[in-house]
Length: 112
Length: 115
Image 1 (cartoon, one colour):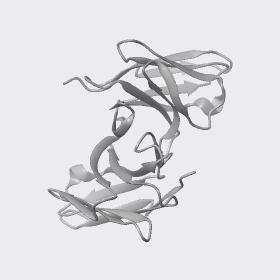
Image 2 (image 1 turned 120 degrees about the vertical axis):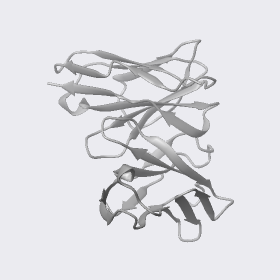
Image 3 (image 1 turned 90 degrees about the vertical axis):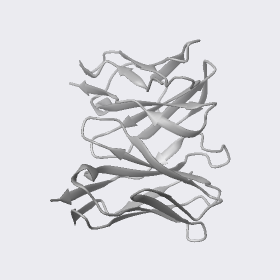
Image 4 (image 1 turned 180 degrees about the horizontal axis):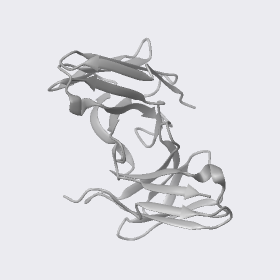
């Protein structure tokens, strides 16, 4: 069984730039949720993708967007980066969008 | 929406002692509560979870108790070991009416097990 993987591990961008983060779900899982974890805080829900459509969204602006592909992998895109976007971005996969979520190792984004 | 509080924020115990972390939630409709362990530089790892139809669940040295009336649940770690040192997060469903869809996390408890 393959666990959740994310790429890249670390990323440094400057304010105003755009970034794309990638996630491959655990084998057999068809749903991916994205979370933002600021330093010293718990993860905060961004949005979820199920069957290639957004299926729930947290309190994040539209410059945070995503995609899910037929193989259930997913991308998180952030436009017009701000300094406060610096965080660990986590994806979690689950089956049919319910129950237990399994997290990947995260992508550390630093915005300068 | 759901709100989750977690205490204490830091906890130091001697190796072999027990550790208890407590969380409260606000929405009485919440019915699934996972606990995650996060080690430095890694993503959260599910260690135990409990559904609202039971009051307690055990897995070796780890147990979770749930009090639906008081809307709180607790993580109990017995016979602590240095490798238990990590940040622990509790969570509750973001939208309780949508069973376990996504989660609100507590702020975390940094557990240090001293040898």
